[in-house]
Amino acid sequence: MTKRLFKLAYPPPPPPPPTKTGSKRKTGIISAAVVAAAVIIIVMLLVFNIIPWRPGTINPTPTPSPTPTPTGGTSIVTYGVLIGTVVDTSGSALSDVTVSISGKTSSTNDQGWFSVANVLPGSKQVVKFTKNGYATTYKVTNIYSGESNFVEVTLSPADTTVTFDAAQGITITTVDNARLVIAANSLRTLQNTLYTGMAEATVTSFDPSNEMEANAFPGEYLGKSAADQTISPIKSFGFMEVSITSQSGEQLQLASGQNATIQIKVPYSMQSEAAALGTCPMWYFDPATGVWQEEGQGTYDAASGSFTGTVSHFSTWNFDIRYPAAYVSGRVVDSNGNPVQGAQVKCWGTGWYQQRWASGETETKADGTFTRIPVEVGVTFKYQASKGGHKSTVFQAGPLVQNEEYNVGDIVIDAPVIQITLTWGLTPEDLDSHLAAKLDGGGTFHVYYWEEGSLTSTPFANLDTDDTDSYGPEVISISKLRPGTYQYSVRHFDGEGKIATSNAEVNLVIPNKGIYRFTPPSNQPSGTDIWIVFSMVIDSTGKVTTVNTINSYVTGGDDSTLLYPP
Ligand SMILES: [Ca+2]
Ligand SMILES: [Ca+2]
Image (tube, rainbow, N blue to C red; front, top):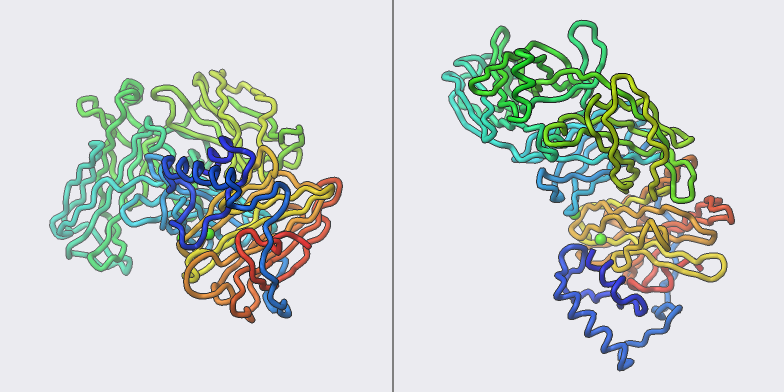
């Protein structure tokens, strides 16, 4: 952000890249004061011609080292890539969250971004998000071969962690006045033996009238009926995540025939509705299917403003009812009016007690359309399209009447059409993504940490996240391809080790063309700092005609001419 402000305030002279000896750059760390001081110094240097700077030219760079024979791997792969971001319930980026999907795991960087490559295609795949001290949550997403998909996740800090004697049981009350009662001698190990030692219970209750807590809802607001297994949209009065472990960390469950009691305080704004109902279906989140399964029923107690019910196993439990629905349709387009395929559309209730459900479409069709997203009748709702982590404006509509079909028209979004991910291992600490292009007609651009770019204006390419402390990911998105040649490189910015032994992996995702996976050649000449990975040629219609694997090492710097295609 600070770098963007800097560029807006002082458009003509691009700042020189920082030196390795300078304090670590990177978004959000540099204070406004430091930026202002840097601006003054740079402007003075430029005015007094201390820094040579020539508009429209690229700084000279050292002679390249001899190019080794490519030995790195390149393949077109038949998997999908899952990219996403994780925030906490205050909206801050959350690092070191473990992300698991069909046996693959990854973790989030300092900016809360993650990328999982090599995910087998499949619809309605369940993604699990865990972090010590936080309530586990899940998202459900589709994975397509040759495409990237994106999920946004909110994790809530755990409310209460209590150690207790399983032989005696315990009653735990959370800050939201939710309650869990575990009877004496009611726990078993996963080997089905009675557990009588010390146990640790982590309990987190969620107030769905709080929009950020509602965002931490596992899966989707869809429940499967106990009676006939039909799936309907549901809205919540409150939910609770319970995890019980032995002292050695082994997961514990309720023994056969045993029940625990859970009680959820209904938000004040929903208490008259709860009182009128008297009872409420209970649902548990089934990580195997990604759907809420109805099981049992809670009873409302007006004195405490709570629903109470019993459960036979621990999971995330939810007091929800089905709601009468209206249906929203529409189309997602780019700023030129072209349909955007694969966008997500989310609708959610708004108002002081209506933000207790959300619904959506995981991807728009080839013609950009989405159909029949259920919304609660009689409620004003918001809606928004997103793709690849980039979002449209938030719009508002409703209230609608039961079974009404409502078309919102076109939602405009500057979505990425191509994404390039970079991940690596522990060392070097800081690798950087560079995308540089020579355009037909003479223009150039270079997107990297110091010039993050933009999806809504030239260069229509953006560095979404830069990682500086091992592993990655880094993500570059491109929203519009312009005729010319684009070249992507990885530069070793900082830290011990070399690119060749970094376990780096680059995935170039071109929808309708495929995913190109690159790994660095092993024979990296000493002194080289740049791995030129690939170039791609864009024709006059803005389509990728060829992807050329380069896989060579050169010596340069952040502003090397060698980062540009020849
Ligand atoms: Ca980096
Ligand atoms: Ca990192």
